[in-house]
Amino acid sequence: MFKELDPILHSQLRLAVMSLLIGIKEAEFTFIREKTNATAGNLSVQVQKLKDAGYIEVIKQFKENYPQTICKITPRGLEAFDEYVKALQQYLQAGKE
Image (cartoon, rainbow, N blue to C red; front, side, top):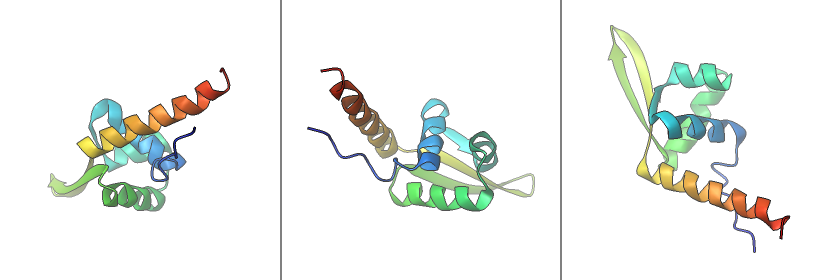
């Protein structure tokens, strides 16, 4: 009856990162860190897990001689997020039937 929830997205911080990226498609690491209130170390680990799953692309570059990290949602990430939301909706609807 219930679909299994994606364990990658079922983490609060990873879900927050993906939720931010759904609306804006890409963002700087520092922006994501500020919005999620995460530490740089913890966010870095969670971003790597999203990257390993193919849900985001991480672009490292320099901007005015300073390192810059951009996180960009991938088509696979969009699809996974959509499936996750549908699965959650199924859980929420179960109590109303």
